[in-house]
Image 1 (cartoon, one colour):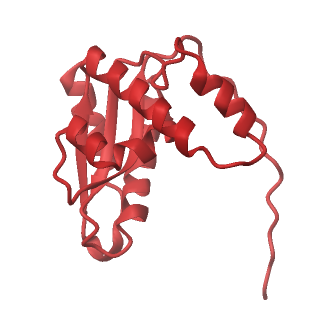
Image 2 (cartoon, rainbow, N blue to C red; image 1 turned 60 degrees about the vertical axis):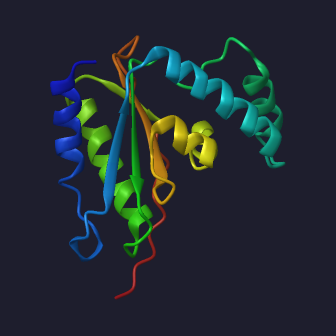
Length: 166
């Protein structure tokens, strides 16, 4: 993944609205395959230790226990959007920036995925150190970017439930 493409995606991300125009986001770009593999292993181990019970727990446990499963799907780049926590609604602001980034990537023919499996570990001191982040920053949106293996197919959507008040 070339630098210009990544800069273009981040350029689209920062066009997102933010509460009181704080623009309290910070972007970390990882392209080092060895570091991505290390983060994948550490995040998987952390998730296995902290996985909450629920309907997907068994499936997630099986997936995360597979030593060949890379949570980043061998993508060439991971862009992590973080915030300092000082701005009101900083998490929401980062999510809006993430959506802009993902939509811009889609428009450019790229694939993206918000990797929730990595999110908890990246928020630890060890995870922040791996990203080279100061302790005060909190990673919110770890998004992989790459060339999809196949053209994405449309996903069926449920009819929205709308409550009208007139």
